[in-house]
Length: 549
Image (cartoon, rainbow, N blue to C red; front, side, top):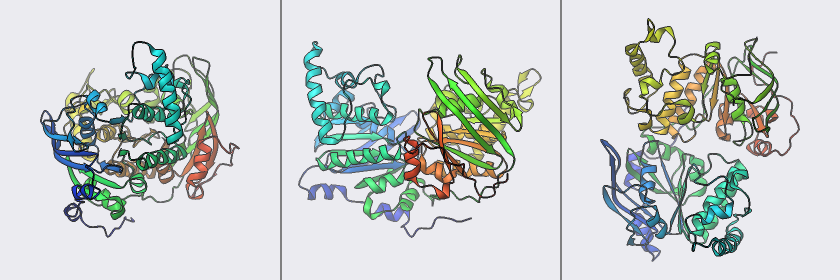
């Protein structure tokens, strides 16, 4: 097995030579944009933030990285006024900001773009921008002023968007622009972005970072929370690393490396690429021909999908969210939208697979495992304990029953084994799912599905919002399942992930397969163009190494 080698200093050495950011800010002759002094926050027995001190110089892009549960989101929620710290002080521009809620944070010049946008879908861009910032009870003057200001901001920061467009008709990238415009309209000088590229195409992400660099060059300050170290290295000026509720290092980005940051985040060396042997595909497990779907509103979501996944291979489906991937996975998982018209044929290990109806239990009995795109809405019952969540969908299996009843002791014992094997933290089977970080919630879902040894595993966005240590772990588990002979259908908006994990890549746009490529013969630019619907001819299927007709 090949490992990633680095000559970077050990975490303790890096921490010892962390940037004296106060001196850096003082040298510029201006106070820092943000200074956090001894911020602490607990939720019951859990210490989320522990005496955190951090300085963000004005006019910089400052990255914050760390594992899930490291305290990043809690810290930014304190800065934006969602939570009050138990101890500590927040200074904005050298003065105590007195942040007690989001309104006071906005008055202090802080804006935040959340990972899940806070927009009203059936309102226009203009209405969303002024919502909560109206000049008076008469909306006419507010709308006119907002329209003029949006025109100016769009020209100045490359944030062009139709002010009269209804938000739900916009692409994800344009909705994100609306969120940034909302913050700038409220005169934010400090902009916090939480995992901003999770649902963007490569081209949209590049455009976003051009916008952020433009904001920085205009003197604004950007705080970027992301688990993508490539984005940190390419975009930020400084980076702070958090681990277990503490800041373990603050560094100049130019003076560190992805390997060093990863080691700081998790406290050990991390493999930053997927280490796998070539696939050895076997017989077809899933065969789709002419699969079409029209939803209840009459919108055609799938437009003739032809696709095969073989035993011992990972077929990756690349594409921007909203181009039919979700509907494809729902049909295969047995929970398609009721009332949808579905045509075409599907076969699982040579046997016909019914497409109509909603019977996820029958899919599981047939050998289909499912890691859904939205772990919280579809993969877990958030108020139920971890041990209960490890058995959902498989609770009727003989191993978990005692006569007509479920065997709680057997389920708990199995859950304890899974939690240990999949390194779920904290290792408490009785803890409700909502109290685990996103990465550990995902591990619970993955443990449940992989340990059933499915013939076909449907995987939707396996590492969305997951930290680098958990990503490495999840990728290893998927490769191990592939090598054990399972067929895996992988949907991800993370192009790097698709290229690293897949043995064959199919690109979806507007409900169609635009083409197939072998990962070692495809470029990110080519795949990105196909994801955007450019170059839409149907390319010949790429056959991976070891392909057998």
